[in-house]
Length: 330
Image (tube, rainbow, N blue to C red; front, side):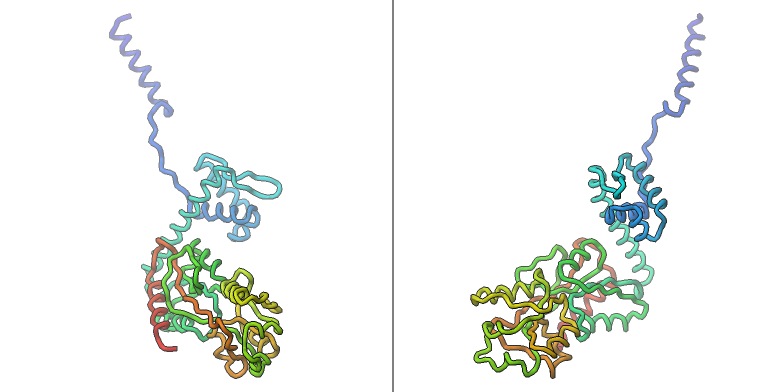
């Protein structure tokens, strides 16, 4: 065969091989993860069940299944082990979950930032409080903010300090106002707003006021209204009694918050209560402070926000109103 012809045939065969799609060098396409698919994934992780995740997200179970199939195809590994009792993360799924949670949080922050940029005087603020008392500096600050921004919506969550801190850290709340007893630490950013006082309260005319002297030992004859054992106030009371060589008070009514119902019980019985001084204002004629040694317990009130999170214009406005309210005379 002529050398020139042989060379031509070789070139044609080589070109034919290269024209096959798989023979060409392929450029890696960027991975795209749908924010909605990530939300569905996180819902399944929370519930461990496709059906319950679908109920939470307001979609059908097949929609959840398809979203997770898309994610697994994109990532290239199985994220869940499916079984009769639900869905469990695989080892790869656990690794993916940590990153997915951060991406979902960043996406939510971007969406919130965009909303803030579009409407500086409207939007949603998600605020956590531990004390639902209406006559408080926090409530006054929120009221002033609403007067200045008629389009603003506020979602209030009442909870314990630790759970509110976790909600702020997870991005479920924008900010929270919580008490910070001595020695307490939070994972979120903290800014001190002021102080509050925790006192022992009893009904007007309670026999404790006739005790001589009015002492911790004299309270042993009465049952108490107390928050749960893991609350800072109850731990502080237990430490006072222990230091005095006394047994812990007998708790007849356990309540997370000193509500109007709890104070109504105190006003109508011989129960003693541990309560923020602020909550007693509207009960001045019926419930009084017991002047016990070691009380009042003072603690800082702090504003929690997420470390490294976006501080929106609405959040900054609320912070300014809170600082003004807590500096103003009560």
